[in-house]
Image 1 (cartoon, rainbow, N blue to C red):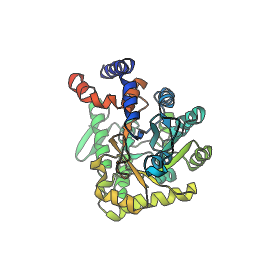
Image 2 (cartoon, helix red, strand yellow; image 1 turned 60 degrees about the horizontal axis):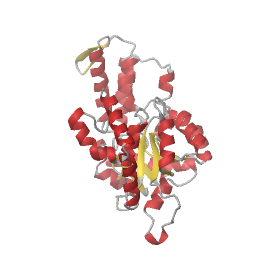
Image 3 (cartoon, helix red, strand yellow; image 1 turned 90 degrees about the horizontal axis):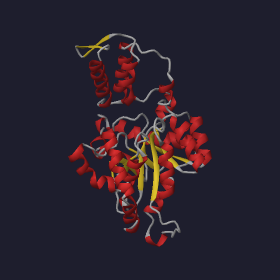
Image 4 (cartoon, helix red, strand yellow; image 1 turned 180 degrees about the horizontal axis):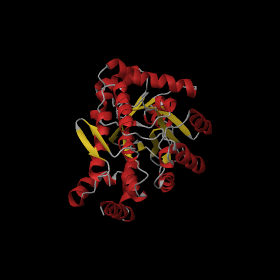
Length: 345
C-alpha cells in the first residue's frame, strides 16, 4: 500500500507539471550535477528509468561531468544542450551490471559509471552485505546456536533475527580479516552448500574480462570502491584504512591501464565515512569522491563529499522522475508525516 501511494503521489507531481517545473528551476539556477546511485541492475525497470533520463537530462560519464562542473569560468564550454547534466553510477560491480546495465547502456547509447571492488573481482566471493539473508535461506541445518542463542530456522521470525545478527557481525567488523573469519564461521555453522543458484549468480561480482569488455565499448567508465568494501569508519587500524583506499586505486589502474580519479565510500553516509577516510582518499590521489548522502552538486560542493540521489531499479519510473527533479525531496517530509512515504518509497 505504501509503495502504491508513493507512485500515486509521484504521478500527481509529474502530470501536474511540477516535475517539469522543478527541472526548469534547476536548469535555470546555475550549474548543477545530479549523480544517481544504483547498485543492482536487474529485478526492476531500469529500461524505463534510462529512457526517461535520456529524454530529459544530458547524460555523461562521471569524470567528464565533474570536470565540467568544476571548470574555471574562463574554461567553461558553452553547450547547445541546456539540460542538466546527470550521471548514472552503479556501486559494487554486480554481475548484472554487465548483463543488464551494460546491455542497456550500449543499446540506448547511454554512458554509465561503475564503482569496483577489486578484492571481490579477484576472489569471486559473495558480497558480505547480502550474506546474512543468503546464508539463512541456503542453510543445511534446522537449528544453529550463535552467542548462546539458539535459532530454529523453520520459524520465519527466528530466521529473520538470525539474518540480522549475521549482518551486524559483518557490518561492525573492525578489520577485513575479522569480517572474513566471521563469514567462514557462519558458513560452516549453517552448512551452506557451494552450489550457485541463478538468483545468486546475478549478485556475484563482475570478472576482469567483463570489465575490460565494458571499458572497450566506451559506454562504461569505472571508479574505485575500496579493495574489500569495509565500512571505513569502523576500521580499527588507520594503516588498513589507507591500504583499502590506495591499493584499490593501484589495482584498478593496473587492470584498466589508465588513471582512476573517482572514489565511492562504502555504504556512504557520514557516520560510515569518518574524517580519516576523507584524508586517506585525498592522500591516495583521488580527485573526487561520492557519498550516499542525498544531494545535487554545484561548483561549491566539496569534491571529496559529493552527494547522490537514490537510484533503485525497483522504484517506479515516476518516483525516480520526481526524485531526480528535486521535487520529491522537497515534499518528502510532508508525505512521510501524512502516509509514511519518504525517500525509500
